[in-house]
Amino acid sequence: MKELLVISGKGGTGKTVVTGAFASLAENTVIVDCDVDAADLHLLLSPTVKEAHLFKSGLQPVIDEERCTRCGTCRTVCRFDAVTPKLSISHIDCEGCGFCANACPEQAIEMIENVSGEWYISETRYGPFVHAKLGIAEENSGKLVTLVKQQARSVAEESGSDLILIDGSPGIGCPVIASLAGVDCAVVVTEPTISGLHDAGRVIEVAKHFDVPVKVVVNKFDLNEEMTQKTEEYCRNNGIAVLGKIPFCESVVRATVEGKTVVEYDHGEAKPAIVKIWKTLEEELGV
Ligand code: SF4
Ligand code: SF4
Image 1 (spheres, helix red, strand yellow):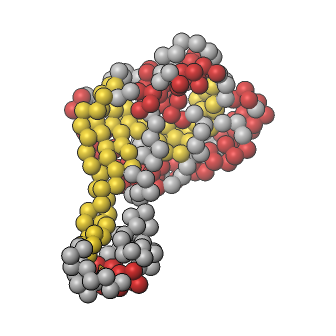
Image 2 (spheres, protein in one colour):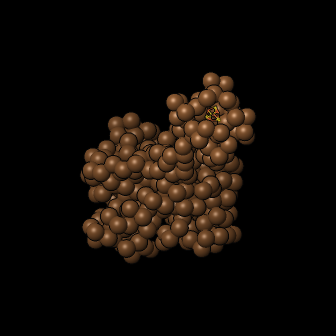
Image 3 (cartoon, helix red, strand yellow):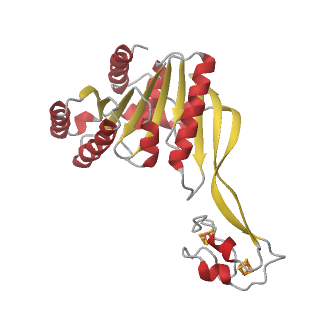
């Protein structure tokens, strides 16, 4: 069983469009959305949720109003200004350190497990789909990514899948590092702009640091042929294969609006380019 991760140095490069298209083309695959901060692969795959689970992470304080004498100590000691003047807890500001609970003279504060998101095992027209949703302003996205990947591996083992196809997060933060763990190949989707190349370079360095083989796809390459050449030159100089280039194509937007993958939406020049890229990947991964 192989694991293929699709990432990008920044948002908006077409990473999820490419992952959705790969999902249409792959066979015997478990699909995973590890972009837990801004999950959107489900918009293309229309999953039917089979299992939903809470994601608990960290602790949060709860004040027992009956015991509380409103002395204000918790507000005084909180370094994060998370206790409001009315002595309620702002869960957006609270870091869950528990100092207020220790300091409360009435033992009126209990630290309880924080539910910071949900994760799901679903079915799609292209096979099982493991995905998650992190709550607003919640942290620990790397931990949730690790959990989602573990679940995907279990589903893949049970179903005898050949491939785990993962939509990663943009950027180079904690969820991306968690996404990279144990994958056989990372495909970096970039666009032909100065910032696109800069950000792709950063995520490529992160992947290399973790010894993950990297390949590059240039999306909307024909919008700036000069930057596309610079991207190819960068890849050549760094020993990275460019898997292919996808032309700008309005049908990509139309397909997304209709909730279809580019491969399902049978128009435009992007589809044959992505099919060609997928065939190369299939051969190289041996799936
Ligand atoms: S420290 Fe305890 S008793 Fe004092 S205001 Fe806070 S919760 Fe209430
Ligand atoms: S747990 Fe820490 S951050 Fe949260 S309210 Fe208490 S002292 Fe402030």
